[in-house]
Length: 269
Length: 304
Ligand SMILES: Cc1cc2nc3c(=O)[nH]c(=O)nc-3n(C[C@H](O)[C@H](O)[C@H](O)COP(=O)(O)OP(=O)(O)OC[C@H]3O[C@@H](n4cnc5c(N)ncnc54)[C@H](O)[C@@H]3O)c2cc1C
Ligand SMILES: Cc1cc2nc3c(=O)[nH]c(=O)nc-3n(C[C@H](O)[C@H](O)[C@H](O)COP(=O)(O)O)c2cc1C
Ligand code: FES
Image (cartoon, rainbow over all chains, first blue to last red; front, side, top):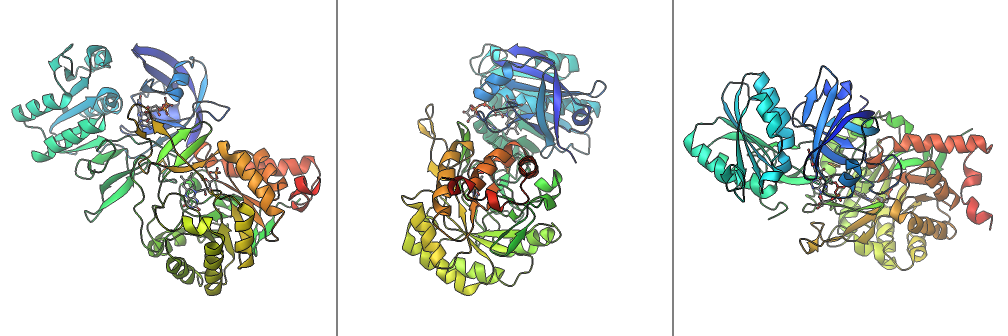
């Protein structure tokens, strides 16, 4: 199983302030990857700074054209270098890696909650859910209107989405979790998926679990190897016997069930 | 041409091993290549009881290096013997278990448990982990403590005994001589250098453990110097590591006096690092008409 390959950048567009979408040609990846999985991207071909690869969730797949896409925000050296790459250039990718989201077997009402860049893996997921004729809607949360992303893609998909901005510059004023609380009070949901910053995920998990709603979150942790060999990406989670252990975000995750993750003792606590 | 070497009675088909903690138990990288291509496989530091490890974040990148504070997370020796070692039986490469603990008794118990196991070709005693709060490190920084620990372990095992030293000492030669005197068959140099990084926005250390061990290209000149110094002092073979990314790096360590090398951080960047380094060493030997590695070991100090 050769998991390492060079892929050509086909398209590289700015989607918002410091936010870019990169489309790669790689039929091997696009035909295999499942929502929730990620790729480990080598930033530079030569040189040791930055040294480590960078993980990115799969945002979209176009199977017919053999393309897959990532949506990323520039936050540091690696993503700054990425932002300068041009279509036609090659980048070395490892993957697809990680455990995907599980798709519910029975039909039901599904709610997705995305905070900021957490939208990336949920977009690919929602496409798959719609393909299976699942009833899904998504809450998109951001600090302000400019940071909301993917609206056009969602309109194209024809999916029901609700916006929330903390400063009220677009949609519901408040946090995505305030909106989720409201939605959960109003409607009956069977399953939930979420990705975003830890404080948000923690609130999402407690809101959902208190109503007995099952679901999954996608976590982020700094990674070194990306394949389970270094234990660098560990996150506190419940083991088989309910005991607290560390699980590897790159291998057991990045997707975890709501019950499994322990949002105590995590970063940000 | 022969890349084969022998370390403490362990025959290896080439001098390139995995560095402990950077290669799990081999399974993950066997998805990339046949582990037979490695000189030897050194597994993650293993303790008597399972260890949970440190709070995240455990990794912070720094220029040309990484800080890690994994904290010896491992499932404990019983689990390793039952679940991990059987899978390595047919690996086609010598398996070396890296052992760690807080107390002397823990090291002794581990050595006793592993002594009769055929599938284990050697022990690497980690007296140098910078990421565990008590013990471990004390053995790594005190010549007397290190010597007496090695002596005690030597008395309970007939397995080849490799002692892995910490670079966080003033006199690495003194440490090496102390463990050689008490029965170390080989010396691994080096573990990570204690360091840290601070997140100026949160005004806090980046790592959950506050401090961590630096590895990768950033430490290569330091680890190379230590291999150079120690290999001229001791008679037992030295296994060099610390920042090896390429065959050229590995050859530097060999010329500095290492009989074998170990590759850690490089695996994270390029999962094929180990077989590519083996290939590069072979190519160098071909180009320079070397039949075997021995004239290259210490070539840099033999020449001055
Ligand atoms: C499974 C997974 C999927 C991800 N998917 C996406 C995605 O789809 N889009 C996207 O924009 N980002 C995603 N990330 C985060 C992305 O990997 C980081 O933003 C990126 O590695 C930062 O690299 P840098 O060199 O620009 O920043 P650095 O200079 O390395 O760091 C800048 C800041 O970003 C933080 N950071 C660095 N690495 C990570 C990381 N792995 N996770 C979280 N924070 C990090 C650092 O703590 C620091 O505060 C994902 C992370 C994981 C673990
Ligand atoms: C993530 C990580 C985990 C490590 N775990 C161990 C360990 O369990 N036992 C040990 O003796 N050394 C451990 N080390 C140290 C390495 O084996 C090696 O000595 C060091 O990283 C220097 O080599 P490198 O620069 O090639 O990585 C670890 C290093 C890293 C980066
Ligand atoms: S990043 Fe190495 S184990 Fe997950």
